[in-house]
Length: 139
Image 1: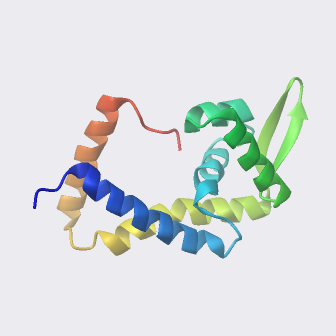
Image 2: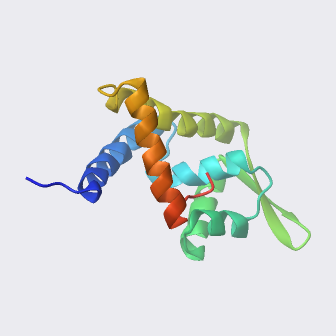
């Protein structure tokens, strides 16, 4: 049977979401908060509009996610001048580290059938596609 890249990506995506949700559940988080935490962790003092634009999400979804993370004690949203700035709390920093590490852990567990050389080549080819599409997220 002929399989496409999108077929394999859908399998990987489903597995990654389940894996990530299981790991983040220990902190009371879910997959949906993953990229928000990583962005704020890598861009401390960013604004909600910067985050929304970088993650390519709509404003309402972004605001609900930020509010939920703030209410749960993972980040602070402080007014500075005319805008708000986002910063991770110590609880948020712990979540950021776990969220960031989950990518490497998933690769290690699921791509161990590849040699180091094959793994690097796979990433290189995928990066080529991402570069051509201009669709990489800033996380």
